[in-house]
Image 1 (cartoon, helix red, strand yellow):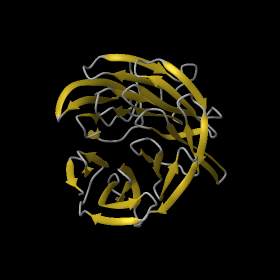
Image 2 (tube, rainbow, N blue to C red):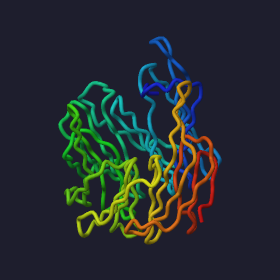
Image 3 (cartoon, one colour):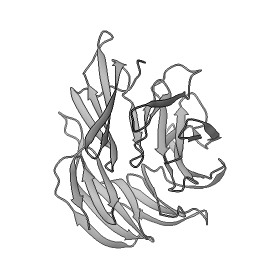
Amino acid sequence: MRTVSLHILLCIAFCISVGYSQFSVQMEHIGSAKNSTEKNTVRATLMKNGAAVFTVERTLPFDVPYPSATINETTGMFILSYTFDGFVEAYNASGKKMWEQNFFKEKKPNYERTITAALGNHSIAFLTSDVTLSNAVVHKFTTEGRQEWETSLPYSMGYEVAMSPDEQTIVAGTYFASEGEVKQQATVVDTKGTITASADILFRSASFNSDGSLIALASEREAVIYDVKKKKETARAARKTGDIISNIMWRDSEVFVLESSVQAPSDRPFYFSNPVVIRYSSAFIEVSRNTYPLEKFKQSSLKDVSGSIELHCDARIIKVE
């Protein structure tokens, strides 16, 4: 078993659920190692309809980050990404390790790098960056592990990546910060790896409409509608509350935005509370707003389930409409 890495979250057992559809991945972080003689453990458990299917367990050095997980909620395939070491592992729904890829095999381990992924039914988009390199890179892979192409992006540090439902369009966020100057861009890349357009936003959440012609992009403070065919931004809206935007989602011709309060006590880790779901037209005209009195949660998302919008806050599920 390979020893791998990630940043220490000083906790005894910290669980994160990624995805809430038929398949999900539960990440369990175990340990509070503080010196080189101690280890931490990470367990990634694939869940199907709430029941455990299999578990991948790894031992981690005391001073490196935990891996992140990207799941295809329909097929059950998931990716574990180890940013410090620079490699990813791909597993299918039966628990078989399909392949692994090292994006930085010629380089030493590094805390200042990123690996994010968007996983479709047939292909995967990886966004990688390393502080020692001048450009972040988008890599398009098949789910069997064959790289189809790679494309360098304008700025050095990668952020988030998303892929359209038909897997023909990728949008990737990159930025550059130096001496108080910050440059940012969401770059649109077509199925051949050609950069076709860009938008001025560093998004943390993205959603394509059903035919992939429009993208909703959200940073913590604002949201943008981008038209892929016209190659231009068509609408922009600031957050409606004093909180942060944590998720955005298309449903038919409307956009749903989730805003939540950030609570940062001095004596314990931050958490979210009081989520607000705002329903917009595609021109960002507000249609309705619902506030939910939830006191504490770590993870939240909006889901379109059989035509209904659900708000998922940790294990709690609330029907929005």
